[in-house]
Amino acid sequence: MTGSDPLPPRHACAGQPLLGLTLLLVEDSRLASEGVRLLATRSGARLRRADSLASAERHLRAWRPSAALVDLHLPDGSGLDLLARLAAVRPRIPAIVAISGDPALEAAARDAGADTFLTKPVLSLSQFQRALLGHLPADPPVPLSSDCVRPDPAALHDDLAMAQALIHRAGRQAYVAAFLRGVARTAGDIPLSDAAEDLATHPGDRAALVRLTRMIEGRLDAVPAF
Image (cartoon, rainbow, N blue to C red):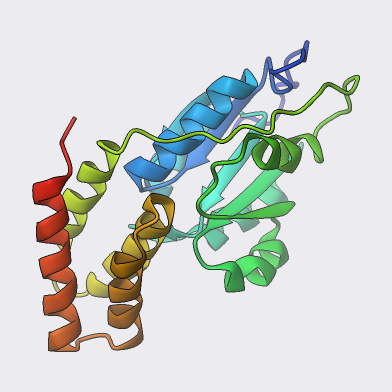
């Protein structure tokens, strides 16, 4: 990661308190990413997305973001490792935010170096804006929005299709279960969240695997693709 690039000048205004910022989102869920993209756009920030640790490293070798938002469950490892690396780089990225569908991971995220923690689903503009503004150089205060965003539900199709492709692969069920818990919470799908939690709690259980597989198939039939 380049370490000499200063933060660009900001000219925050009402309705766009993050104007002038560039954000790196490290998130494997298309649905969750779509929600954060809408939050960033409504707030005036530009967003780059990485869907894995490897992709994030490629971005960071050439570019220093104003802030980083890191999911903790990624297909090629733990976001905690990336949080620790970002926190150790000097000059440090001013705002390092951990995001997860599992609030029990907040302490571990902060220990790894996160400035703050957001529990999925992240849909509130004011919550998103406060999480970043609390750790950025102060600008004159501007009003924050009380609105919420609604990701395009078609993004859910991509997440379900990926889960379907991976769920029967050796060694991937734990990842898929954690991934789908976050996706289901963002989508407000309690039965899917419960089924993913069941597989996470009972890895290798045939009945839990079959139940979750059938749910994925049923939802893919009901959700439009992009």
